[in-house]
Amino acid sequence: MKKAMVTGGAGFLGSHLCDLLLAKGFEVICVDNLITGSEQNIAHIKTDKFTFIKHDVTKPLYLEDNIDFLFQLASPASPIDYLELPIQTLKVGALGTHNMLGIAKEHGARFLLASTSEVYGDPLVNPQSEEYWGNVNPIGPRGVYDEAKRFAEAITMAYHRYHEVDTRVVRIFNTYGPRMRLNDGRVVPNFIKQALGGEDLTVYGDGSQTRSFCYVRDEIDGIYRLMMSDYSHPVNIGNPEEHTILEFAEIIIRITGSSSRISFKDLPVDDPRQRKPDITKARKLLGWEPKVSLEQGLKETIKYFKDVLEP
Image (tube, rainbow, N blue to C red; front, side, top):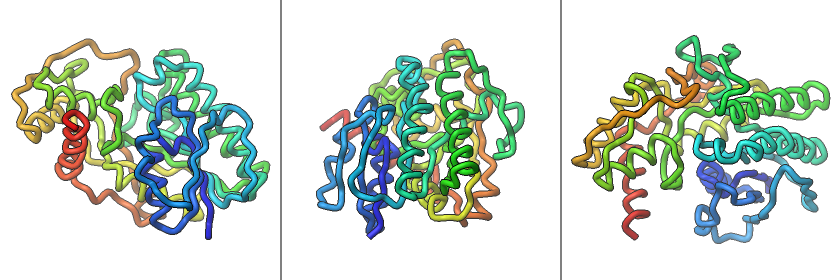
């Protein structure tokens, strides 16, 4: 039986990844310091093949058992988190990734880094392919996340080249679905919470900025396929269907049947104007592309948030 470790395993994406790995017969070690994750996300897992370790990956971690795969997902991932936790965000991208690469090297484990579309910054090309080097402000407020992930990619590739660690790098685009935090600060939970509460939906700027939304089930499938592939360089995993934020707000209002209106506020500093993945590599190398429509995915997500708001 193969054994996998998932850091950030009690988070939104991490908990879904733990579910998939267990369903595929893996033993799973979930590591999380619960700074943004929650034990509620893994409370449903009742099996002796699952171990939870509360730990901060920026500090040394010693494992008695050997592991075969290590998924490094640990990091605050929403603007509200990394703006409130800038030092922690930088440390987990640098020290946390370094520590986890050391564990992968020691155990001979295959290592996957969960990177992000934010490495492209406010892109000057659309869609963004893996060959694009990005347009990032390293000293802006968002730079703590963008540069933490860019450093994490750099040290991952250094371990691959100089220590021959078997590495994978996934660049995750906007992902949504059940287990997102209600006060996550990202656009999907914000809009759904506001719509269900009959509040105005807050759109920043004029709403012409674009995002591409991938349902969590598709995202996790892509991450798993990349880990099991033989490709060691970055791969975009996201949905190339692009929507303006204003369009997206109107879709949320329609699906929820809300009487909410739309209000406008100033655009945050360095907020990307465009976000759309080029998934040519994922299609060719992994045989992957998203299957869940935005309508279907949002209905499942809205149901989850209704249950959270009205237990």
